[in-house]
Structures are given as C-alpha cells and as structure tokens.
Length: 155
Image (tube, rainbow, N blue to C red):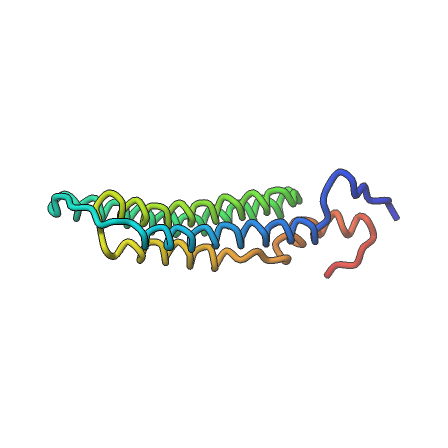
C-alpha cells in the first residue's frame, strides 16, 4: 500500500464542501440581484431600440446558460481522462459563473431598457445554477485510478 500525501491535494470531501459553498454563494448572489432590482426606478427610454436590445440581452443570457452545460461536460470529460480532480472544480466554477453572468444580463436589461420581464433571464440563470449542483460522483470519477493505485476500494 502506497502512502498518500494529503498535504498536497485536498481530499474529495474537502473539495466537495468547497464546491457546495461556492454553489450556494453564487445562487444566493442571483437572489440578491433580484432584490436589488426590486428597488430600481423604472427608466424611460425609446421602446423601438429597447426591444432589440432586450432580445439581444435575453438571448445572450439564455445562450450562456445553455453553453455552460457543454463547458462543464468538457471539463468533466478531461478530468476523468487525465485523472485531475482540479478540472472538476474548474469546470464547475466556470459553468456556474456563466449562469450567473446570464442572470446579470437580466439585471442589465432592467437598468438599460427598463424591461419589466427582466426576471425571466434571471430565473433561467438561477435554474442553470440549480442544475449545476455539485455531485461527489464527478470528483470520485476523476480520482478512481489514484484510489485504486493506493489500494482503496472503488466506491
């Protein structure tokens, strides 16, 4: 049995807890954006240009949430292939940051165009973050060869 160097790489449980904290923080941030939006004064601007800008901002926000799933899958695939647990965490953070950026575009839509349906993009971003809930299985998949080499049973 080979001794494991616990000082150089955090354990799977520690990384999982870190990912949970990050997930909850970014999900809460979207909620805070919504609360901030409730205190915004409506802006008065030209509605013809606003419709196009609203479509662009809403489409971009929704697109970012959709692409976040592909980005996360790519990182997860690389983490299993290379057996690098850090790639799981990186993919997770990038994916939920993309969802949060999509939600922020909803807030930008409210501030710039005064669109009263800004919250739809924020909800899509929050749902994206909810769907990116961290899973311990992803971390275990990125370390199964290392655990087998160390003599640990596969879970």
